[in-house]
Length: 241
Length: 204
Image 1 (cartoon, rainbow over the protein chains, first blue to last red):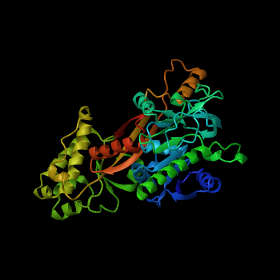
Image 2 (spheres, rainbow over the protein chains, first blue to last red):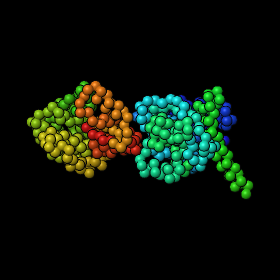
Image 3 (cartoon, rainbow over the protein chains, first blue to last red):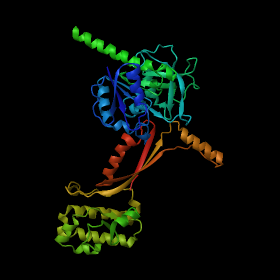
Image 4 (tube, helix red, strand yellow):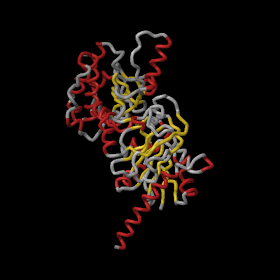
């Protein structure tokens, strides 16, 4: 099982993601430079956080036109798993791989803190290991994390269960006080209609070891690994049958 | 002619023409152009740049130029020089804009097809000025903060503030329409985010 972790000029969570995948979860992961037009046979792609291209113009606006994003578009259109974290989420929205967009936090503050989240659905390769009642504690660190989209798209997201994670308070309620950035309906993560592309603002790679204060982040990567294993097992049984 | 830098970089010829330095050692005054023979017209084909000064010229200058353009266009040998024809066409358009400011904003007749499709292309330097603003339906926390600050300082009657972006892009194209198409496309694809932003632009 191979993970490709994209690296843009300005990415700064790329090494963290590779570290968690390799050293914490024992999977193969390699960095793919933004100028590469191939993902080298990866089974899944992670677009890490950071400030790709210095966030010039708009967050993710320039990164989406890089060579590697062409490969990601093709990979995603064939059903490949693509996870965007923070700036990766912004890039996926800019690329049109995810609905909506991320704008300046309502508070006009850069928010860097731990938040509580709840998975809205389990029907996703990215959150299938998160029990529905579990309070997931992950760090956020962003300036443009306010999820916004038009009413029609929002209704569509809800109808098709594309909202994956919401910001909640310690009691598990999606209150306004628990919303760190003004996102519509406390949305912290969404997926596409095909469910194989997802983006989230919190950083699971920064909370995958006890040393760093929490291991809830592993659940996201373990969900992806579980989904890939299920898919591989299904294709093997198809071949043997 | 857009700026002082252009004047420094390019030779100022006659009242209206600015031609790239080094490319023009054959012309002293546009009035002589009407007497061009074949050799001069050939040289004119290599004209790579021609800007039209519209700001400082008097009405008479423009009318005089228009007359000279007409004279030059009437020379039989000039009719077979597509690039020269195209130069003259642009020059004429510039004159019209000064002479009849009320038509500015209206499009003058487009270049004749044979000029548009000729293989020799003359390209003009233009500047696109793009303004990108947040859509009204989107909460604009920056704008709100600025509004509060303005009110706090004591300015009266301050309404909603919207903070956007302004871009200037130098662009070279055969005409304004072509440049406009490219800028519009770029605005939609990359320069703005259509979900949360509106854009508008002018090309000079």
